[in-house]
Length: 117
Image (tube, rainbow, N blue to C red):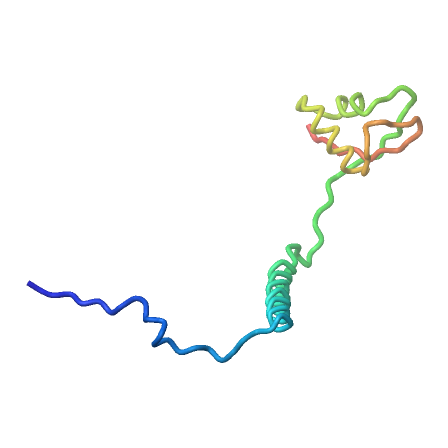
């Protein structure tokens, strides 16, 4: 048989050495602000990297359509959408023209995607 001996996990309070460093209220604030600054600096360095490339991308082909009286965004999108997905075409037209709503006015010029058959 073998025997196993373990060292005590905790040392008695009487034998522990007392630390001579005591932080004042201002010292704790300095340690906290320094730690916060370091965490923020690391976060900015990690998140600050560019995700784009140095080369320009190829823009999507578009054409300009002038809105006639009585035209709606749904109507224009349904004429262009060859796959029948009118809502996604409406979203794409809104994105291309930075429209905040689906309301259009007569004479307004819209950029719409060119859909190849």
